[in-house]
Length: 47
Image 1 (tube, helix red, strand yellow):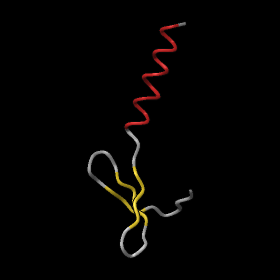
Image 2 (tube, one colour; image 1 turned 135 degrees about the vertical axis):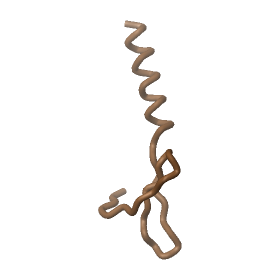
Image 3 (cartoon, rainbow, N blue to C red; image 1 turned 30 degrees about the vertical axis):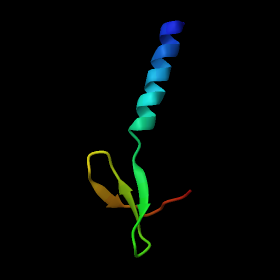
């Protein structure tokens, strides 16, 4: 049981650090910033 709890904790921690970010450009368009330094426009972004 402890191993499963530890595995879940590590998985959740890893997922929280590997999230992409949404940014807004100067002209108001939303872009998705990825961990690998790439980006793309977001078409249907919802909060």
